[in-house]
Image (cartoon, rainbow over all chains, first blue to last red; front, side, top):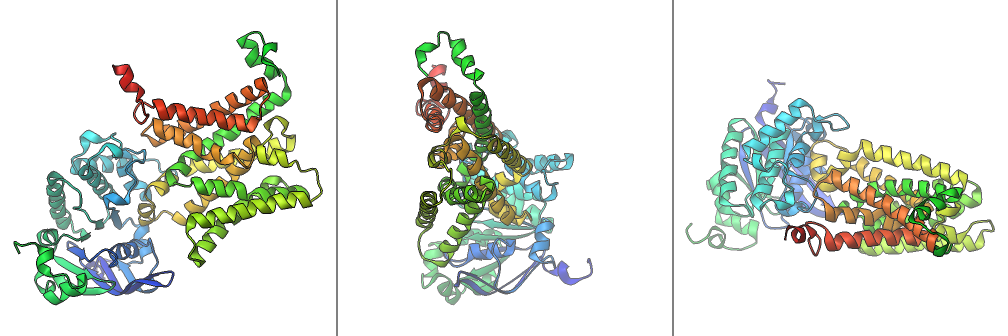
Length: 254
Length: 288
């Protein structure tokens, strides 16, 4: 497989459409990402960011189009543990009786046997992942007792333990402290060097500018895709955000 | 049985055990409690209390029809339990009516059908024992069925323990790493229907939902570890069954109601005095 062109694209989505009971959530969306690329997914609430993620992870079925992950089908990518999803803090039940170690271990479930008994290698992977997000002191802390930033790092560690080549992050910077933000940005550089591909959704342009190589503006479909400088034109911004001026979005300093 | 006929605490406990029906009731109710308690942690975390109520009420016509046809009652109950869930899903998808409304109208419809059937089908069905349970009068064939179903549910839940926990916690992640979420969803529903079937032996159709949610809710207040939650849930469910049956024997009370009341009291105790999540936070009081 080394010679085939899947090496060129980790994510290759062509003209994908998703509808829920006849209501169109996303149509004709395209995205191609290579190893080591970091792409920001930008759009308003309800513009289809979560739907896009759901389509890539196989959580919803696409009604049209084609998705290839590392050259394979989504189903095969799931079996290969290729994609890791890091949820929004609001997307999880923080009162669930589970601690940091057990959450991170869930990253290994897909490659364990049916009883999900951790092997030596799984334990090691979890240990390493927790160390990389600097939570070694909180192994047995229930997630309900963690700060927003620590919780975010826990789910990042789960993605690391999974050893996925693609990371999907839903609002990775919302509600996190500065320390976590710094740690995430350091991890991004490491992931890039490891050839992982990152797709992150955000509404904060400053983070896009700081971390992303590429931007995908969406509003039910792709408004624009490419490098920051090409994509952030006033027209594109208007189409994406329905007429709100870029000054408002970027803040006065830009 | 009058309380005054017992002289010592010892005889209060041991005398009832001389009756075969009491030994059988204590054994079966403990088993049923263990099964429902085990499942309870998943249902409370998944937020399926109303679903539990719906399924347990919907099994009613199944029980009646099975009795009338001479089939194992658990078979009929299971068909209608799963059928109600399928119907809820179907109506929710095809109409604009909100989910809790759909759940409410489907299960009351099934339940009403069951009651009408009882009045029409001439047989020796004892409506009272179906509605309120009769662990003291359980027949041998029902004992066998209950034991078989209980072990089946415990085995299923044990094997898929971790997957079900992941499914309750983060189904999206489960799907992303290639775990069959569709299967887990129906596995949990199947276990719910089966647990409702055995639970109604003990406390009857009307109260079986308490067996499915109260122990889990109690345990949830007492721990932050999932495994401990399951253990506490099972333990509190068994304890309440034993207390309920003894109390009903001593004071000549309805058994099913006594079991559920015992569960409710244990929950209230946890609600007030749980070390971390109780209103009075007992740990702090002890610590000074």
